[in-house]
Length: 520
Image (cartoon, rainbow, N blue to C red):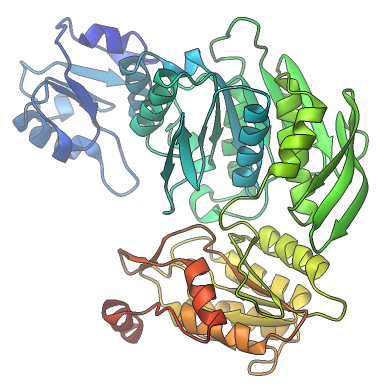
């Protein structure tokens, strides 16, 4: 492509050269620059990409785009420089132009929120497929592009801008008509979704999470609201109105998002029945749940193997989006009955034991509370709930106390362990949670324990279990690694729990990790 073709898509260009160079590719990583590429200098959290302009030029960059004034940079006069107000935003738009604006060729749905995004995304994907649509999906767990599934499993939900546009372009090439994208607050603030023209936005909830990054719940909420504020600004597609789906039960977002302008607004609620879509006659069993879906589309009986009130909310959110896109209530009911769940979300591990063993991704105070609530619903009469969890290092520290408080109130036994300590002291992280458990009336060695090795922690929980109990492994879910220091090491909670059920331990701490722990 020519440089001018890419720049035509970029908002807020401050200055641009008259030189119209051919562009062979785009990157914001100076190490990936090849001759003829456009280098986008992005100011990062820790490193400013403008520092690497000389290396990019030395590697053959044909043009440079950035935010700083030209006179501040080491740039040869022969290399065109484009100055913009927001380089991150520009990076998304030039990638969108490079791939031919694939989002404009799709009915694009964005699903955001603190908890429930992945399940809601997968539910909507299933509903749309059952209605006969060709559907693509980008979620925490996987990317579904036509017939191809790419498993992710690490710690990033919304991919970088170039990857997002690449995936969407692959979907278009595969004949996909509808795409469902899980949207994080980080992805919105960091403009990874710039160039994505969304048609429908869904929010699940907003609870305590990521405050280490956003600084306050107000800033976190504002980040989430970007998805909804961008609806009317996005390009309209023939016959497709811009739609917002809001959770009337969520006090942190409902009143805030309700006044935002949009062409159609749908509300849903479990606790608040005065909504466009509501759940009536709720019933919970160890095998799942059932309720009547009611709203302007009439009434339909729904059954699911999913458990917990929070999954009723997820089902309502996905159903509202599906119905707004023309899926019939009967199709929703059939697809939900066939929906087997999402890997690492209340996933049962059965090795013939006399109690229930479950792996779940719950890693926020609200998610832990909801998961413990669901465990109580599936436990046998008199059965106890035993939970294993940790808190990540270099992340929101308040969660360590809050999750300890939740466990103290709602779990019978708790085993505190490792969850991605990164460069923080694992023992110090665990101690914060332990103090909250003690403040909640729990006693170490009696109804809670600290076990640094996650595999050994799971074995401890299994050893405590009696017939009819529920053992929960929370926080890792589908993830395939755990971070110690600055390295990711292979880890799978599902494999570890299966081994624990056989009386074995999947070692969390091979030599390098043991050295990390002993150094703390």
